[in-house]
Amino acid sequence: MRINYREPYWIKFNWDLSSHNDNQYVTEFNKHNNDDFSDFLHNESFVISATFRIENTFEKDEISMVYGKPGKQMGLSYNTTTQSTAFEYWVTVNGNDEFKYFHIKDVNVDDIEKGVTITIIRDGKSLVAYKNFEEINRMELDGEFVEDYKIPGFFLGCASPQSKEKKHRYYCEVEYDFFSILKNVTDIEKIRDLHETKNGDLINKNYYNNILCLYDFQTINNIGIVYDESKNTNFLEKVPSEFVL
Image (cartoon, rainbow, N blue to C red; front, side, top):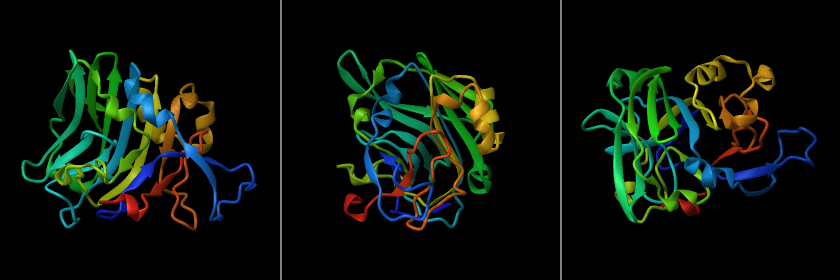
């Protein structure tokens, strides 16, 4: 699925389908903020995995975020000038907020343009980066992620569309094939298996209950909502234009 420039999507709500009888072609839902996306970064273990591509002709900022979180800039970035990819974030160390740059080595322009799977795993006090399920490098997580990241919401196609700093909104046009977040998981082989397993077979996997959200972008309803293929209803929707600065 193509996410257009300055038209990001967000994972923000848990949707109530109880009154729709499995009918995906509806126009109104009851929904509420989902706390899972307010605190999962502060767990001792989580996985964010994305399969995407950003073609040379796509519209993008000099620094683009494939995904991000409200607050101080955080997420998977692609710098078109240096042609480098990184996981950027802020932590609090001894009461002070510090910016961190976790370079994801060996991801080149060809990977970005043709498509690549990049997985970030938090394993206790370590962050580990994988390219196509092979470990690239790791970095110690000094301190803890800033409290900003407990603000509800998670974005695809930018860092945060309401960032006070215009340059930190980091918009990009990006083609997504797969995106998932899991909690309490650190095994890359489970993530590889997740990518390779048909949705109907996921329920039999021992990590099934750890999946916060899973999008293969194959089921999209009449108002553009991307269905969550996990047991949850954390659907993905375009950020309303009034929230895009």
